[in-house]
Amino acid sequence: MARIAGGFEAASFNQPPPFEDIDLFGGDRPLGDAVLRAGVDPEASGLAAFGREFGARETMELGRLANENPPRLRVVEANGDRADRVEFHPAYHQLMRRSMAAGLHGSAWEAGAGRMTERAARLYMATQIEAGHLCPLVMTNAAAAALKASPALLDAWLPHILAREYDEAMRPWFQKKAVTLGMGMTERQCGSDVRAIITKAEPCGDHYEISGHKWFMSAPMCDAFLVLAQAPSGLTCFLMPRFRPDGSINALRFQRLKDKLGNRSNASSEVEFDGAYAERVGEEGKGVRTIIAMAQLTRLDCAISAAGQMRFGLAQAAHHARHRSAFQRRLVDQPAMRALLADLALETEANVALVFRLALAYERAEKSSFEAAYARLVTPAAKYLVTKLAPGFIYEALECLGGNGYVEDLPIARLYREAPLNAIWEGSGNIMALDILRALRSEGGALAVVERLGAAGAAGERTVAGIKERLASGEAEAGARVIAERLARLAALAALSEAGGEAGSIAEAYADTRLAGPRGTFGACDMGAAQERLLSRL
Ligand SMILES: Cc1cc2nc3c(=O)[nH]c(=O)nc-3n(C[C@H](O)[C@H](O)[C@H](O)COP(=O)(O)OP(=O)(O)OC[C@H]3O[C@@H](n4cnc5c(N)ncnc54)[C@H](O)[C@@H]3O)c2cc1C
Image 1 (cartoon, rainbow, N blue to C red):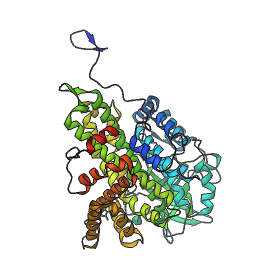
Image 2: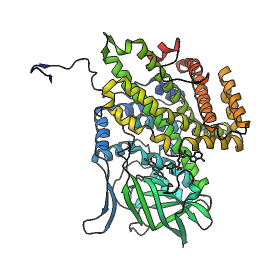
Image 3: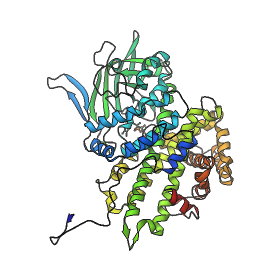
Image 4: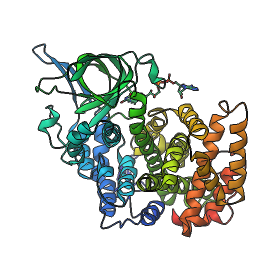
């Protein structure tokens, strides 16, 4: 009962019931279809149960608490000793425990078919409820790819990456079962252009000592960090643990935590290294090549996460539209709202088809050179498009909730503040577009991938011709975003067409509304018969 002016009490009405205790897996048709296409059993894999656990009211509450009580840096102890510790709210630790128990930080490295799809599905669902705690888990999973450049290091660390028991204690990694790994590349004077890094690495017997700084280094409570620094033979990748091998604390001095737009449960630090102990990963001077193996995987995860966040925005919009009436009709029955929801649903269908097709390519790449070339080329394209769509998409979803969407009581406001981040980190938009150009120009197999993607019909063929024309022009770099967007749209169309079934049947609407010409705002297009099909799936 709500107290209203005039002194009498009346129940609120025409307000949607709380959006909680949601079945994140069972209620998501595009996700369910993608998982089945990859041959993964939702029950046996535990995905169905994971969707219920993460959609539970209690897990959503952990997400709220972890963000409303952001981490705090403790620079010094009471007695003046350096502390360099970050304290998190218990809700953050609980989320970490759950996500690590589910293998989000390393299950891609386990044996067995379907592992990439299973992990992608868990990431896609978990990010809907709380994105910040996933930062160290995404980095840990990806770090194993860089460690491959030094097999002895991989042998030592992989068992800890695969272990699932979250251990928040500040103690050496070799005393823990499971670990988390972070990454330090960005400095004050450079982020995208890592060759301008000035942090120095001095050889020192069997290890190196690193001095310098990082302007952004997230998840500072990780057990170790992959760090780029200038060694005598050039930019090199290093593994820098929080503790030295003798058990003493390594020389990482945290200066402060960033005060961020969103992603507030995650700590992102500024740090200085004062002769910090580190071991070389890969060859001296080959740092970019070593770390790029990691970046490919984090970029894949950015695209998956952005797709998940959009899905959650759409789900909240649909929930509101079903339970709210205006002008004597439920919003979901109003033609303009139906057109908008269907257009958002179409984008979600395509994004989900794309990112899950891409995750599958990583698994198949071990045996297929086409899939390896597909993974190489489509990763920056998917990262470009899906992460760029997220802020505008979530804004439209938020507007479907009217004024309620703009208020922090509901999780969509937090989702909106989170949305730009996946586009910025792990290589911003222009960097992705330039990476696509590089691959198309210099990597064998890349153009064959484009040709194959274009085989999905007339719209596909036209798009391939357009990409080739741009590439051949003297202005390819200025048109890098045009190529990136067309390539990503083409790959999404191909993924929808390849999916067949219901997802396949909406490919035509995608081609008509996304590849035919310039696009307007969401909902400003005619989808014909596909509209009702999309709404019934939503
Ligand atoms: C919350 C958060 C957490 C982060 N955590 C980490 C972390 O853990 N570890 C880490 O190493 N970094 C981290 N970063 C840093 C992030 O990866 C960088 O901010 C990002 O890579 C961009 O680098 P920059 O900020 O130096 O921008 P710049 O490199 O200066 O780029 C600025 C803009 O210019 C564009 N640009 C750059 N080069 C070109 C070009 N040749 N042509 C056209 N356009 C170009 C970029 O796309 C970008 O839009 C984090 C950032 C944030 C916001």
